[in-house]
Length: 371
Image (cartoon, rainbow, N blue to C red; front, side, top):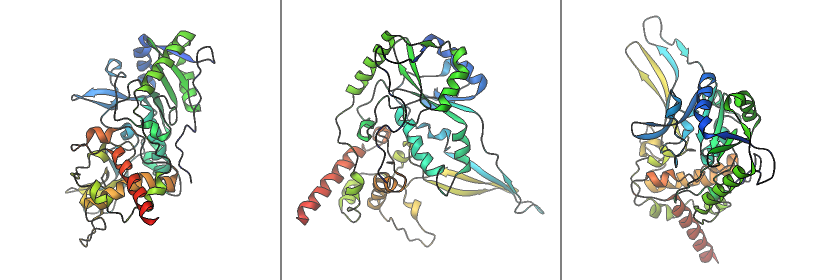
């Protein structure tokens, strides 16, 4: 299956004088947020404890949409860092009594997601919501959530979404997409779910028909954002290169300065490894699922003491090949969207772009040797 790296869904944005687009005045945004809060659980970027993060909105004026990107990805809206899967009793006469945890089917709006994060949900969908093994906890949240994305106006130097055929205004994975047009946002319904939300909230939002001036302003903003992206080689096809590097010594070189802290996996919007453990108390207990990291030695350590990934070289090989070979082969999507969070968060400044470049050079050297 060939990985889908371009825009495979969504509608093209009209240019000046073309099409009909809704316009949401920014001075109406607070009222719109309040309307969403009355009808839905609203999750949006908020400043909490000195950090911008996606959280449940309790006051419309707390929502922050003018931001680069959050440190942590909004995947926790569908795949929480820790969640209870079931509870059980341990009292006399109540052993093995299991209480199922109700699925979270609360109608939700996820507001202000960047396009790279919206695209990451499609990879998580392929893992948790399709195929023979379906995750009921993830599916319940995902099926009851409308994703409202906000086109990126200020990509960082660490952003490389364009390496995957994406960009600052890519609608893929969104239900609604907002584009900055100065004193207003252009609003596009990308999916039927997004259109339904727009039809429901439209009267309360005071939507207008976008004029040519606002469409031109949004286009200028798009071009400015695009110009901030650093030139990079497309990722397409790298899975074929990686297939021949499993036994290469390049992984030891790449992993030399890695601290095995796991920060890259916890900030990544597509990483989805987890562990399941029972928290046992005196009279009851819970079975919990929590995020885990392939960067940790204990992640693959067997009860016997054997570890099939005994060093950081093997763990970096796993991380790279999982994202750029195994997932494209198994589900048709790369396990990376180019958000750059792992680059920013790494304490020793390991750069996944440099890793991919090193992989390409190693593969080219092997070809020369074989020739």
